[in-house]
Amino acid sequence: MQINAQIATYNLKRPFTISRGSRTLAEVIQVTIEKDGKKGTGECSPTGRYGESFESVLAQIDSVRGKAFDRTQLKALLPAGAARNALDCALWDLESDNFPDGFSLPEFIQTAMTVSIASPQEMGEEAKRYVEQGATLIKVKLNGDDVFERLSAVRAAAPDTTLIVDANEAWGDLDIEATIQQIAPLNIAMVEQPLPAAEDEALRHVSSPIPLCADESCHTADDVDSLIGKYQMVNIKLDKTGGLTAAFELEQAARAKGMQVMVGCMLGSSVAMRAALPVAATAVLVDLDGAFLISDDVQGGLNYQNGNIIL
Image (cartoon, rainbow, N blue to C red; front, side, top):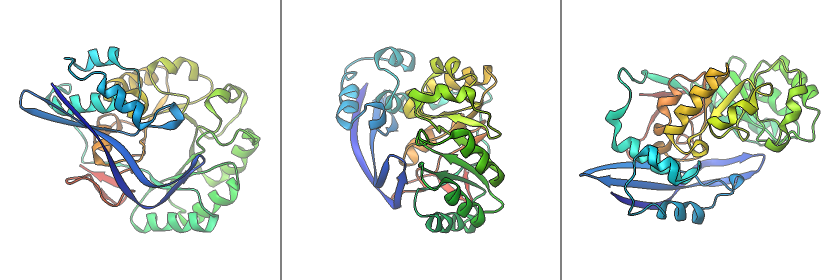
């Protein structure tokens, strides 16, 4: 088994801003595994929020070179995170005929289009562009400032779309219940990770007419029990679970507890978005527009049309 890893950089079509900062580039690590004349490719996005750097992730990948392993054995070699994700997805790509009998993807999957943080006017204009391109599901990134004003601008520009909100842990200084009650008339379908993961115990005492989704608070199936009573949905991202193998486990664990499933992504190419499609196929919400947001996707990348991934 031969493992190769390299850093790839993609230009974003426009700056992407969330509560933790702004980016104009998407930097990822792409991994190829060659075995028995076949090649599989995976991609990951090291995330500083989870204590990862490009150096640390490359070192983890390097630590398994020269070892023979399958996806089950890989889980014992590396912790959940970006390095294991890239390797696990490369193995799935290498062994794509190992999907369960009867598994198939639909003809298309609706994906959210992301409006990043800017002035209310700019956010409304970005939402309008998505609507003109056929989008029916829009994800709105927010911090703790001007929440109602920004959402109102997006709703005015996209009156008939489904809106979901991602606070990226930024509402810790707000009155959460009052904020949710204020935005509820805007017909918001879901609010993602309003409080920092270390502080989300407070959500047990919040009466919310809008479903709450765990992102930073949920990495693997082991986290599900702690989410009950705080969230109604989990956002599955392969970079958090450590690959598609563990993503399937998280999906099953969440559904067993009566929680809904969303599938999300980091910024990256179609290599990363395509790897998540098997879980996205049955998710209630999908946010896999990462490759749509870059201007120089990989050859043979996914086909985005009218707010859908055409398969």
